[in-house]
Image (tube, rainbow, N blue to C red; front, side):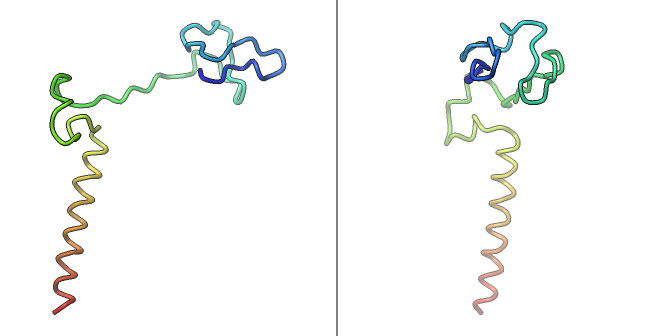
Amino acid sequence: QEKGDSFLIGGMIQPGTAFEDLPSNWRCPKCRASKDNFVEVVEEIPGFEVNQGYGFGTNSMTSGQKNTLIWGSLAFFFFLFLGGYAMS
């Protein structure tokens, strides 16, 4: 969408063209896949939309980001706890 394919020989798609506005016979310039082979990927943020602006920014995190934060903090405190035993 940002580049278009006007930099290629014979390219007619200008930069900024939305995917929906591409012609039905359009093919990817890299892999030559047709337009109908692409699937839109949407990542949904859980919770109510009105509540996503509150808190310390965790309300607008995806579930994968929340899992990384939780498991990463548990691992950090586990190693911190083991480090306390190593000092004695």
